[in-house]
Length: 313
Image 1: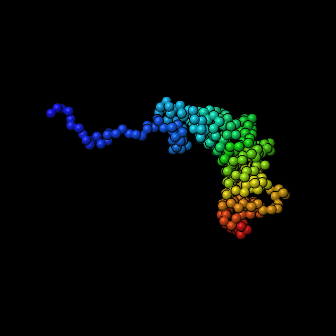
Image 2: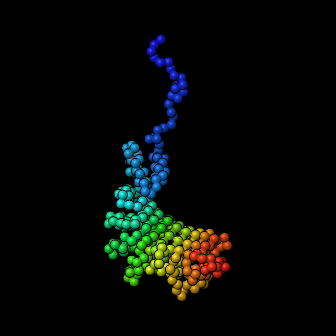
Image 3: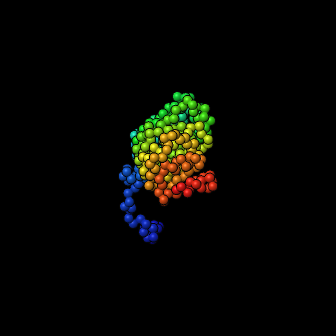
């Protein structure tokens, strides 16, 4: 008997036939791109750009990723200087793709300021925008401050969701309130907008209308120099019959003589109303609204203060 080992039929069971499944490199590009988008979604904000590790897998994958602009416009996360490089690369690679932008900076640098201005100059293709403007804004020169605000008054035809928040700006706005006019947001033109949240920023809602709006949040984090005109809010609500959720948080409403209720504004799809306001402001707002019986209303700071309001619903 030769020294050749006898055949191992147990092993043969696993190697009898080659696999008929194609290797992943043979998958069609459109399927690979969907896989890449899923891979992107698995990364949280702090490690988001780790999805770019797929560039190192193979040359074909690298070429596909670099040539797919929508992968780069998907989300631009900027939470630190470390992420700024990838955000700049993403903006350059995104071509004409829709953009999803999320910028939160407690402190900023000249390079980040320039990036923010560059992104906002592309507002015509921004699909979702989350921007927190911190106290660093007050350290920028006046032309850059005005340019940022003016960019936010440009039409936003692709915008579906926007969250704009100012933090630590109250004293700055208080000093500048008498000189700086309110900026009309998006020139009143954002036909696809479904959600808008504005906190402590000098942005006017004058002339703004959007029939697609379903969620509106207005608020101030601290006592704020700029007043929100009730007439502007009512103007939005009159043109937003599909709105489902309303929230007003510590808004310093100002009311003109024209704010007298004529015909109540009907919001038949409203499901949730939150009012964290002074009693006078809450009464003024409610006097203009006709709410469905199925709407859930929440009033703070105390049940005693707002008991008459609950009775009026």
